[in-house]
Length: 186
Length: 260
Image (cartoon, rainbow over all chains, first blue to last red; front, side):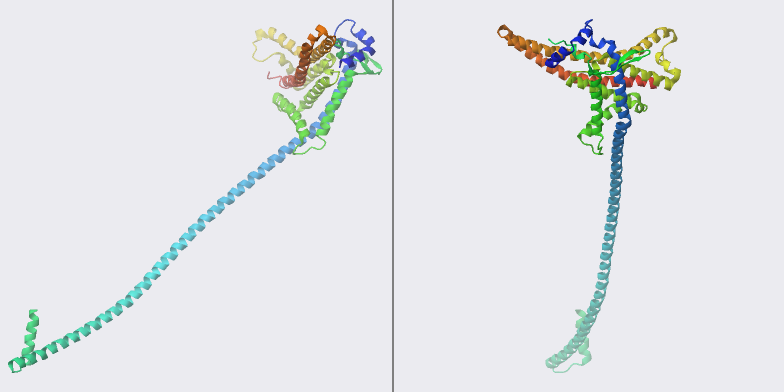
């Protein structure tokens, strides 16, 4: 930098001598203000027009578009989420209903099978009871018959014993009375 | 040692005729290093935004992020200070900020700093305050002058408050111009002085003997130049930012003059 300033200071010796005549700041040489202000205003105006007419609308457009895109995406995501939540809730409700229905069906089936088996059991029981009753009646009849035979045999035996012991046969009525009395004492 | 003020010398690069205006006097329209620096700064800004907006995408690339970042930075600034009406002044503040920023940065890369010229900063200051006055009068009519009479001041203090407010308003363009000018001038003079130390102390050391003792001082100066350059980058941004913020604050006064 110093080399550069030294080289230029050689060529601008005259202006420097003129400018540093008072030893003041170069910035206070008012004859140079007009040109600087003129160019500054023109360049500022050009820059202002470029920025305000071209670049600001472009940048604002991009930024607004981005904000719109983001808000749209967020909105979509929110809708989709709400939908998903809705569907999940519906599915849950359906599941609960299905479970309740299956439980009801199972309970019904169980009750039906219990009733059927009870009915069938009752029929079987009745059949068995009938057969048991018939068998019992037969047994009773056989026993009565047997018992009837027993008393006949006892009379015969008694008559035979009496005849053998006494030599004289006892009458049938006497034997019967004796047997009845014996039976009565028992 | 090179004259540290030499860098502020305005030199003609291309001769153009001198125009005589009735009230202002003679204006030399020649292209100078000052006007060239302004043009390069403005050209770089336009080039940058041409690239940024050449193929704008909803999902931005790196350059677009930077461009939109600068845009949103000033946009938020204008809206947060001025309110909804800030959008109308955004292009002006944006142009001011970018132009000053570009000229400040150019001064750190090239030889000439246009914002270290009082003519430039005074023009910016007058432009800003001129816009404030025009907007204030246009929006509020004579109500704009309520700016000089803050509400809540009892009538017997008017004679004291009104002159203070008027003076502070008149000083606004002056402070705008001098703040930018002073920061740029001071920073570049300091840079030049420290850089000059490096050369002259180095020359002393080259003489050998006791002059070798100058080497640590030269290294220290070089470190100072490096540190100052970093600081100057911060100042370059900060001054452009401060100018933009104050422009917004003054414009806010003009827009909302009634409720000050």
